[in-house]
View 1: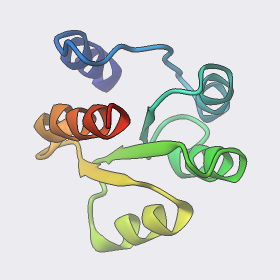
View 2: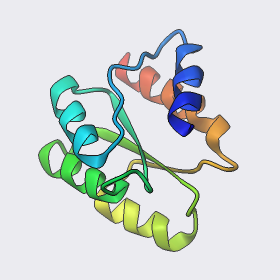
View 3: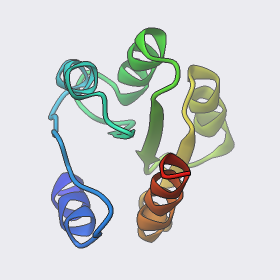
Length: 112
């Protein structure tokens, strides 16, 4: 359901497009390596583990930006994600509407 909401949200942005989507950590890592997107959005609870995918992506492409979405937005999970290399950490229950702002910031940074 979150993927569908994210698809809808991104499809309304004139500066962003979805280049791939994944239902598992393995697929997310493979897609990130194949498509080299400006940002990867992962859910901590994705099958195979979002934090696992985050670590694997950052090991291979440390410059790739990764946004973590979670229902576990406490300081413990944020710290774990930041240490694993997360560039952005959003609570999907109350901060999901900030995704376009973050993506706009990334798009602006890429055009400078």
